[in-house]
Image 1 (cartoon, protein in one colour):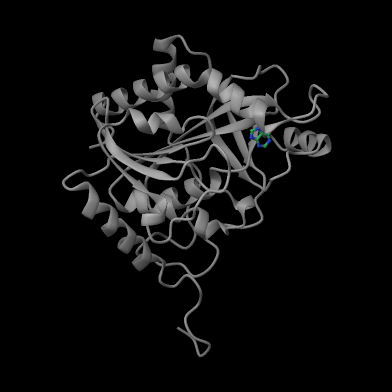
Image 2: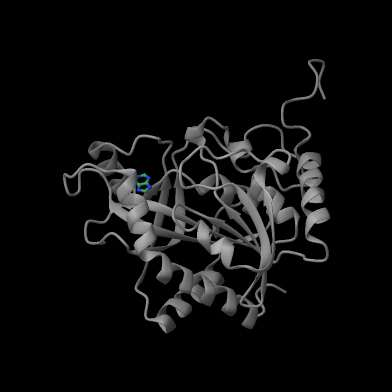
Length: 289
Ligand code: HPA
């Protein structure tokens, strides 16, 4: 508190707890162990949760509403493959006009509810010309090119440290687990670096060349703010990108949102099988304890 009054965001901890309480009042004795944030074309996985309770985002204080076609806004809590999950069906992006604190607020609530593992998925453009659309990429690390940061503003030590370490943001042991599951299922899984760009334009070919040079393998418009707050709060993270298209300039063809959703839909059953396998392995290896 200063002479000019409370800095914006000072009440973040209380707002997170308040919204978590609203969710708890609806889900009874369930305590989520895994948080799922489902990207473009993958929201349907939330409907596979069993004994589920669904809550519209507009019932949840502080949850921003998605404006993108194909991103429904609902929180679903239920079990899948023995894991108690809380899934975000639809997420918001910075390009919709929200700042990174707002975009990442729901992820904070998921962790506050008890989720120790965040499994985040997205649709992304491939920066490697040899990767065909439909390739799945395990995120090893990220580069943040967004023009806002989820932790910008005052820090509340009850949520996490002022300067979080990002050395192993995508938990190595969980990456090994995902690779084991993919191998067992006969799924080709690439691994690489995700770069978050502000959008909503797709990149220019010149930007794509820049992103290749700085060491990125896939480019998208999401994920980083949620991963940042999950790490801030001490949750472990798994990230998987569905490469829905080659990034701009690689083929010379124009990019379209239709291509993105079409590819995501085509890969959906493989992707969902992988998610099932990951949940089963998390339970089996006692990674949720
Ligand atoms: N660029 C950025 N975001 C994306 C892309 C892309 O090529 N494809 C899907 N999301």
